Length: 404
Image 1 (cartoon, rainbow, N blue to C red):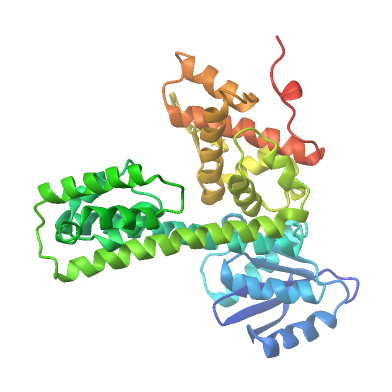
Image 2 (cartoon, rainbow, N blue to C red):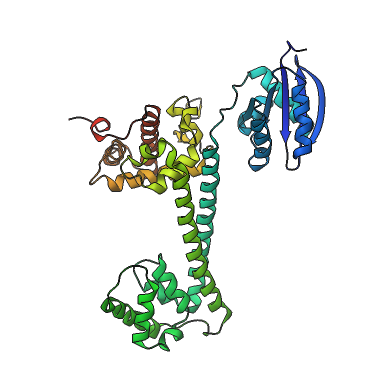
């Protein structure tokens, strides 16, 4: 049996996994393991009883991470297949779905399609990816907290949102925490108010500027007609939410700093930072989502991974307009979209091949949708990044900009 191709199909679930062993297109054994040290010892013993077995399992988010880590620790070669690709290949011969059949179907798909082993990235990329997803969670929580704060302030002190030009930043959040209701402002002397404002900001501010802001806050409080009294429970909610927003914003900054420290040894980081409009946050977040770019065989493969590859539907004389798949990594897509906009903003002083393409398409009469233009620019950006990293080159405007 050593000369026969042996395939282990593993269907991973939350606490356990179903395993099917295929030999010469025949199922020779099926068993179930727990996703723990005991279960993996059983799987390891089974794998060691064959010569060069192949292992295939679906990527199922956090649940498949444990199986992957075990296989990596034991240096087993494996194929971690995308669920969409697995479904497409297994639907040809799978007529019903259950865990046992899925394990067999995965092994059968491997026997038929002979997938290439999964590229094993360095551990730093996985750590970066986890940190970046944590950053995104903080960001999502921050957006929700800001929306809730805005709603609560409409009852307590809506005018405070006009205190300074932006409702972001330590000064605004500190003022809201101290003065969630106009009555607190009216009870405070102007000089004390100015001193509190001075202490609330980390930036240098003159006493004259602080006094002007204090007078402005007094004016806003004088004309405010709150819907609730100063001792209402919603006032406490405003204080809590403003503090939570500040805490979440600090956690975001801490996460980016940690990502920067972890990625400092990677060659890709200075390459990404050399691109006009790319700051450290954009660079580390994109690096975290794309991972080791050397695993992609072309820039088009990155397009597909991100989900900006074009599809077109045609039936008879009807031909639908091209649109992107949006099946890929939505976080990477969002980062690239914002990166393009940053490059366009930086184009005044630091033009790039991406910003020039964006502006040309925007001026063209045939392009009317800004999102379509941005997607085209994202494709250009991906090709640029792929070329630079593959060739270990920094961005050079003399090479990248069109010559006249």
